[in-house]
Length: 409
Ligand SMILES: NC(=O)c1ccc[n+]([C@@H]2O[C@H](COP(=O)([O-])OP(=O)(O)OC[C@H]3O[C@@H](n4cnc5c(N)ncnc54)[C@H](O)[C@@H]3O)[C@@H](O)[C@H]2O)c1
Image (cartoon, rainbow, N blue to C red; front, side):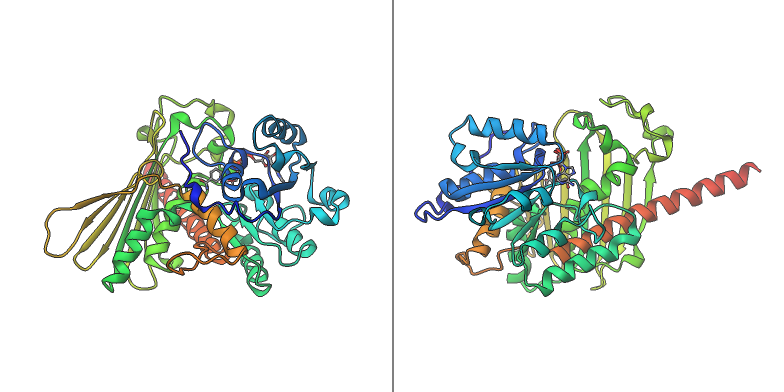
C-alpha cells in the first residue's frame, strides 16, 4: 500500500533535535506488508531532520540491528545513525548520555509486556519512574493478560493522569476525517446516539502469524483486532455498562466454523486455545443506547470488510472501509436516500502521531480541538469491554455445550 503523507505539517523550520525512544522493533514501528502502520515513517515525516531515535529497546537485538541498518542505508540516516540498540530499558538507562535523554517514547512492544504493575510487564511505570514527565505513545490494546489484571491497568492509567503525563494510545481510527465528520454531524445537530452497529470481518487468509490464532498468546481476535471497532463504538456511544454484555460465538469445531484457506497449521495449536470464527455481541451504553458488534474470521484474500453504523433521531451515519478508503454515507431528516462523502489522502496514522507531537510542543490546531483523542484510561475501558465480550461468548458457548450434553444423557 502506498503511504501518502500530508507534508505541510512538518515543522522543518525548527532545528532543535527531538529525541525519541522506541520500545519494540516490530511491524508497528517499522512497517510490514500486512498494512499501512509504520510509526517510524510517520515520525520521520512529522519531525524531518529534527528526529533523533536515541534508543531502540527490543530483546531481539538482531532484528533491531537489521532494521536500523536499512534505515541507515536510506536518506533518513541522520535519525538513526546514533541509535542505541538495547535489550531492555535498564540497559538503555546505563548507556544513555544526558544529551540522549528522550523527549518522547513510542511503546510498540507486544501488549502482554505492558499495562500492568508487574515486573517485566510494566514498561509505562518504568518509563514514568526513570523519566518523570516523559510523553508516552502506547499501542493498542493497552495490555493483555487475565481479566483480573485490568485493575492494574487502571492503576497505570491513574499514575499517568495523576502525573499529568501526556499519553496517547494508538486507536488511530478516531483521527479519520470521516470519523471526525460523524462527530461534527452529531454535535452540530445536538443529537443523542441511539445505537451503534459495528462489523469487523478480517481476511484470515492473509493472517500468517501462528500466535494470532492462539487465544493464549493473542488473547483472541476481539481483544487483539476487533478492539479498534469496540473502541470506535465507545467513541460514539459513550461508556458501556459492561454487566449488560451478551455474546455468542461460532467456534472452530462447529460445522459452520470450518475454514479452507488458513495459511497456518492450526493442528499445532491446542484445541482449547483456538479462536472463534464469529463473535457477536450486544450491550447497553450507560446513556441507554444499544451497541452491537460482530467480529468475523471468514473472508479470504487481503482486504478486510469493516463498517460502523451510528443511529440518532432521523440520522444514519455509516462508515465503510475505514482502513483503506473511508467512505461516509449520511442519511438525514427529509431524505430517504444517503449522501456519500469521501476523504482523499487521509492518513490516520500520521494524524495520531502529528497530534501527539503537537500536544508535546503545545501547537494548537485550527479548531483548537483536544489533540489527543485516545487517553490511557479511555483505552483501558475499551480493553475491559473486549474482555467482557470474550467472556460472555465463552460463557454462552459453555452453556450451549452443557445443554447439548444434558440432552444426550
Ligand atoms: N494500530 C494498529 O493498527 C496496529 C497495527 C499493528 C500492530 N499494532 C499493535 O502494536 C503492538 C506490536 O505489534 P507488532 O505487529 O509490531 O508485533 P511484532 O511481533 O511485529 O513486534 C513486536 C516486537 O516487540 C519485541 N518485544 C518483545 N518483548 C519486548 C519487550 N519486553 N520490550 C520491548 N520489545 C519487546 C519483539 O521482539 C518484536 O520485535 C501490538 O500491541 C499490536 O496490536 C497496532
